[in-house]
Length: 546
Image (cartoon, rainbow, N blue to C red):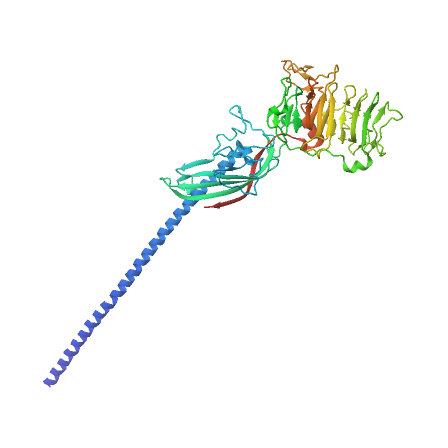
């Protein structure tokens, strides 16, 4: 039995030894296989960490760039707001002119920046601003402004350095500058303007970090000077004498507050040829104003009248006196006319007719008064105002006048033709210095002259500080600072040409102080007239680029 037991133990030891060898072999194999896995996993984690770090860095860089870009846009927006604020407050006429910082740049051909009527902003070699319209430039520290100094002190670029208050209330550093301003429209009504501002943000070393360019399109409206957009014009700006050309000579334009002269084609005050004897109590304005349409004969009444002439000689006197009835045609009355008591055109219909409000409308070709009696206009104290639509000429002499018998200047409206006279006048109006005509004359194609009347000179009267009316004397130092009346023309004249008679020592235009309001009441709000400026009233479009 012993040998078998011994043999069995030997086999067990052999099996244990083989098993130990296998276990050792298996452990060494596993350790050799895990090392590559560890290396691969480690490399993967390293790459992932690096990638994550890069992404984080890029995200931070992108966020930083985004912040810089937002700051650049914020700076550009600040510049846009500053430019609009300056335009609306102190530099309104720059809105209808153009500007470019780089003079080699080209304006949009769709704008009117290439027009001869358009100037610049008077900065950075930009031409001086200009406008064909009558302007109210105001003053600066008591000194009258003109287009030579108009844009002084305007800010067109500015450094920005804020400890906070920028995007997300973070510190911000940079600069904005106006690149261009382009105008699209016209000076009479306005239009639109495109403001281009470049904003840049910089670091402490003034290196540019980001740039933003904003184009903002603003709506521009013409408005009365010193008034809000929808207001009427200041009555103190009312044009008492308005003409394309003026040779004032020694003639006077006098009256409280409203005795203003407008020369629409004059380049300087010298162009009106004013002598030392001439008195103009208001302001001389150069340039055009927005005028209403010339009143036309009512179309619905025209079939009931005929165009006729009023021509007198000898002792013939004429009276335009309407019946107190609406929609009634009638003839002027003639006293002293041979064989008739009325004047009727050859076409067979009357010259005058009343409308539904009993206003009188007379269609007249020529008025030629060469006798010794007057043409008298009856308005029933202004209750039945008279409108004369003059197609030809109005001529009076020193003995025969047109007289507004019982009305004010706004009760007799003389309207002339309005077409075909761009360069020259086609109508003649001659009044004499021996009578007062109270009227409003609106005849853009007419030349008006107040002729001398030897030994029959009419003299205006003006009130003094003591409220006494005294004869006006343009050679006197006496202070006439009140209302004036009884001039050769008492009212206003909007005409093509004013011509002074060299033989007349002084033709006198007296202006009622409330004539502007009276005309608006009689003819409508479009007859509120004066110089205009401009205002930016809103944003039409907004674009941004880098």
